[in-house]
Length: 312
Image 1 (tube, one colour):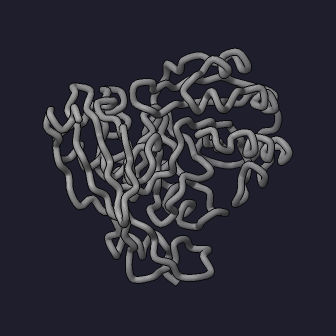
Image 2 (cartoon, rainbow, N blue to C red; image 1 turned 30 degrees about the vertical axis):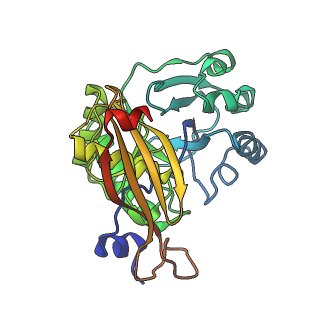
């Protein structure tokens, strides 16, 4: 049976508008093996994992486990890296901390983190602004989908061996069929079907304050119609500066969305996004028991608004 990523690539399924939504990412280093639902199926205390899942629900925070590329033996107790990254333009930040007892994450105010307030990260964990390299999180969880292991792990290893210091393996980014999938922080843009050169360019872009749109699935700060709309405006306007665009309104109309994208210089665009289904039916992941038609976001119109229309 063909792998889900092979089928998706052969059908040229669009990647735009397929990123997982999260205003804030909370990442905990957890070496060793991961199960399909890693927060409760790893060497992390499953009681803690369930508590973090419950605390994050409805806050905009997505909690994930990370580990360094390479052998996955569990080294036992010791300091662990923790990151929190807020991805909404205008208030993008990436903070880091180290903890010996991961239960201290329960002292975080996840609702505040999801809203962009990092103060509890400093108060609870002694976290500070991250001054090192931007992060590239490569999904490698083969227990969730074999494509993530077969395609993600070699990519993470290649990037790490080439000296990219911000590379981590991560438990889940969604969209197995787009493997290898990568999330770049702090800006929160996800990528699919990427090769090492694209990831290196995306990391270079972060250092230079710009967004690489090649193979981009969208920014996790926005819902999926907003992700597709923002990328479409970047293409039309030739805009690659990070933070230049914001999704300011998404109106759910019959059989479409009308998305308003605003530029920092005052310009605005109205983008019409229509839901679609990728055909023919196929497995949306390698472990899927039934065939499905993956949802897609089709941009059908991009219109720059005039000043008079903006005022109304």
